Amino acid sequence: MSILGLKKKQPKTFKVKVMTMDAEMEFSCEVKWKGKDLFDLVCRTIGLRETWFFGLRYMVKDTYAWLKPDKRVLDQDVPKDSPITFHFLAKFFPEKVEDELVQEITQHLFFLQVKKQILDEEIFCSPEASVLLASYAVQAKYGDYDPNFHKPGFLAQDELLPKRVLMQYQMTPDMWEEKITAWYAEHRGIARDEAEMEYLKIAQDLDMYGVSYFSITQNKRDTELLLGVDAQGLHIYSPNSKLNPNKSFPWSGIRNISYSEKEFTIKPLEKKKDVFKFYSSQLRVNKLILQLCIGNHDLFMRRRKVDSIEVQQMKAQAKEEKARKKMERQILAREKQMREDAERAKEEMERRLFQLQDEARMANEALLRSEETADLLAEKAQIAEEEAKLLAHKAAEAEQERQRLEVAAIKTKEEKRLMEQKMREAEQLAVKLVEQSERRSKEADHLKQDLNEAKDAERRAKQKLLEISKTTYQAAPACAGPPVSPDSDASADGSFLRMDFKDSDMKRLSMEIERERLEYMERSKHLQDQLKELKSEIESLKLEEQQQAGLYTLLTEPRPYTEPAYLPHSNRGSAYMTQMAYFEEV
Image (cartoon, rainbow, N blue to C red):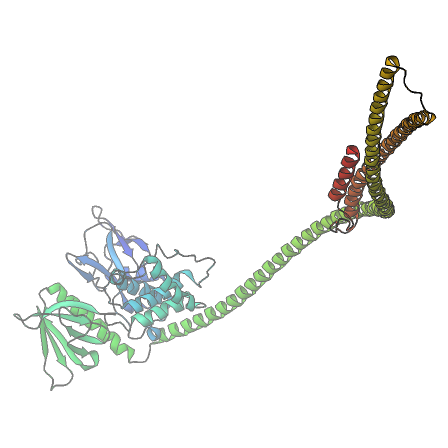
């Protein structure tokens, strides 16, 4: 900027800080600059051509004012600070944003300002509309929703809903984010400028959109009212209600607006209607109301005329720019889609490659395992073959053993049969011996009886002989006795002969009895020896039979052992013991 020469003691320039909705700028302004010079500098800096909607606002005491374009900056009631702070804001609002806002920068500035007014509760918005507007704001800021990138909590630092809405419902920030994200996901494919335009389309239907409110009274002693100025006209509200006006004066029905000091006069176009007057307590506020009324009325009339060449060029350029951007977006969308398809294909190929590598690795591992398994199976097969041979050998041996046991069993059965036959014969022999012993016992008893009788007869004969001898010897010395007759001699000799015969028979009989007794004892001893040998053989056969039966049971199917039916071992043992006891007794 060129600096004009001034007095040496006066500063040639002054500092100005201009704050837009998304930036801050500082300028060095010449002292003689008017408001229009500074305003045009800001518009050129940000590239804004739709300048009729905006103005530079500054604070004066407890209210605000707009910088007048035809008056020097320093001659107005601007703050004396350095730098002087101005806010570049929309001063007038369009009736239909989609028809009037041409430039993207204009649209963006309106979007930011309206969004701030809604969040600051300067514009009332229902909770449902607040959530929908927040979803378009998120789409304008973050672009299309991507669940892989936009994780839960990504909106934690963003201010998207008015505090009144947040306090109206008992919901956590995560629940609000979930509701906003649900709408946000449906806006896929909408560009930033389109999302901002959709936001403004919804916002322009709100009751307090674009309305500037001022406190007034209908007369000097009446109750306070609110005056609303917007693109449609003037509206009168109750102090407690800014949504539904009590009375409205559209710009098309107003013939003239004038004020003198604190009194405002609204003259309707129809002469039959009454003139409406109201009062404002501050002259500065009255001037501000008049500025807004004149500006909104001018824009209202301008909208109903043919667009100027400049506006037509701007709209044509904007249309071409939108078409170009749309084509670029389409090309970008196609490229993005192709890139996404390529990325997906690449990921699929990589996944397939990894899968094939995993399959190859698994196949190699499976091959190694199969080789190890084959070696192990070969080793097992060899071991199994050796075991089979060993089992075949053992089976052959078992078969031979079985055959041997069968033969041994047959022999055992034959030996058992023979032993049983020998036992039967021994039993028969024992029975015969018992019978013979009984018979011999009886004969011995008879012989003993005969012997006793013979001994008695011999004793009697000896007694008689002694008596006879005694009598004979006694008679011979006393007297000579009569001669002995031959018959008496003969009888005496006969008695001696009989006595001698009986003595010889007794001796012979005794000898025979003794001899028979000895023979009987010898035979009994021989029989006892045979019975003992038979008993020992039977015991050994029983033990061998038990061993063979156990081995045979292991080699063949297990069958319960049944004792021979002819005689249990215990009975046979008891029979043998009975016979042995009897023979020992005999």
